[in-house]
Length: 78
Image 1 (cartoon, rainbow, N blue to C red):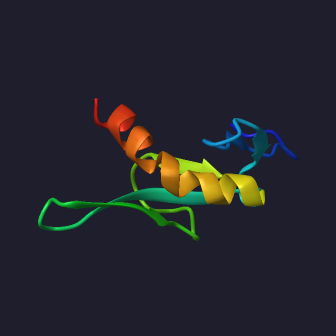
Image 2: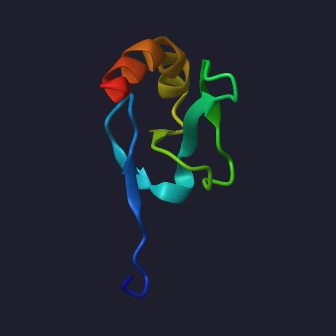
Image 3: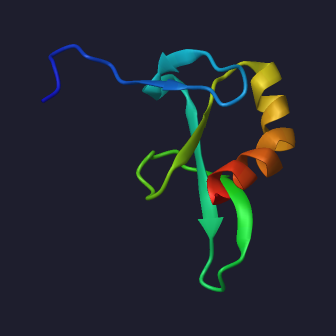
């Protein structure tokens, strides 16, 4: 049961800072019907199934995220 006024927090995968969920951009894996993975795609509605990657709005984090994708995908594939 969620408390009144409670705001869920998530961690940015780049800077590891904690932010309210609404302030972060969520990305999910893009598995298509052929089973090939195209990498993470934005999930603006934050409703797609699966584990998500959250990135904060800092310019440094948005620039670093594409470079980190391969490492993140390997960790999740285990």
